[in-house]
Image 1 (cartoon, rainbow, N blue to C red):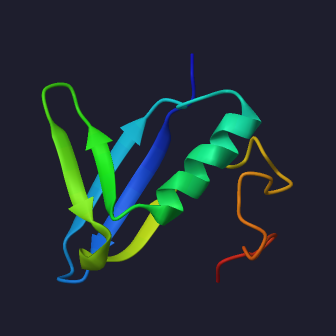
Image 2 (cartoon, helix red, strand yellow):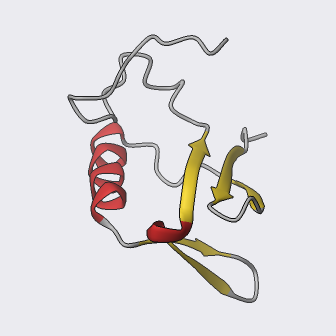
Length: 88
């Protein structure tokens, strides 16, 4: 059974949306390119069964995404990312 990843978006107005989804690609090179594209985008775009939701980056306070543990060296992250952090 495939491990689901999660996406949690917290908006400037305090509302929150959460989603689960399967891995989008198994290829680490493709994952790196997708993440770079995501960082350049103006929207977080989520496809559901019967709809597509677009969330403008300008309305978002924070985004949490799981699923980078399969790249423990952080290779999918940009060079300026802080690696090996622990949240307290």
